[in-house]
Image (tube, rainbow, N blue to C red; front, side, top):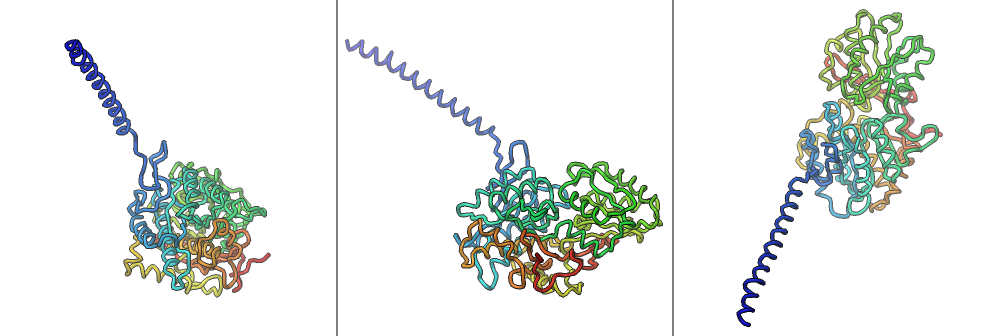
Length: 515
């Protein structure tokens, strides 16, 4: 019996047991191998905390609060300065403001625009947090990227909405940048969710409240005039005559080009000639074939009587540059023309593809409405609507950043396109709304911030911006905002000419919009 038991234990049980162990171990190893293989082959789509590459895209989009600069070296200094300032804030003492811009833009013009807006927003953040009055809450700044064309706006908006709760306490979004369809959708989604938005350089009339008495973007405030107001200011400066003017416009249009076209058309009632359209690529930063179209349009222009001497252009900056190059090569080189356009002209100062010979043509002048200009208040005699002292606050802050490592460095600074100035003012308006919603310095309710905009007016409550006074009407639009008229020089610099006003004159010292 003992032999039988030994045989069963050693030859049957232990052998089978060892087999079972071996099979189980093999199964575990296979499972681990499969898991490891899946893990190794699974793509990591994270770019940085809060930033990912969406499916089907290689762009890094989302909201960043670290030193991540979206792969753009020119942003790195300013992003580090923002991170340093955010790190100084004590827990519970701050609210968050997001700067919404296309941080992954690829063309040089848009990247320069984003850099300047980033710098301006940071300088206003620093000023707000280090003001001698010690006002609270403090301001934390984060960067929100919806993609180069804004295509991923929905993902970014969802993320921003989530940040209104918890320790982030997001209370406003500023920036926005270009007046595009995607940005319009983003602003509509943000404001529909109760998040206040402060537009810096958006000028399209259909990206504003108060049109036809409606407010489709509740909680939206802007620091730039609408295209209609820019056109009115331009008309008051240039004394445009409908019988002497010729309109060239973007046929397909976007919010910016459509509204500036309509504004120009109002100025040209009674014009002798029909407007000339062109069709740009869907991505208006691309060259496309419009250069050929512009060569033909200049031939048509040359066929008009010599009394036609003003050309109004409703288009984006790439097409604007192409048209200027075509005008420089026009067959009627003995004809004098003045080209007038909107604030897209500010991109021309950095456009290396602009034909120098066109700028040196003494019979061709290029003038545009700028959102801001560093020489405006130093060289204009206007006694209201802004001041050199208000503008000097910003330039003093820039000077401090050059010598104080607690403030700078923030990279290469250029004020000539006005983007840094206008972004600085937009952030200051955001701070005004946040602190106005909480007079005691506590954390304001999200819903209360956007209710502050109708009170931003008058001597005491307006924002004395570096770009001019910001006095908002009941719909969050700036009233009779100063509009610098700028001329492109032969060496492609922006020369300030004169301040102009939508109302034909600067606002009274009270800066109260009429009923």
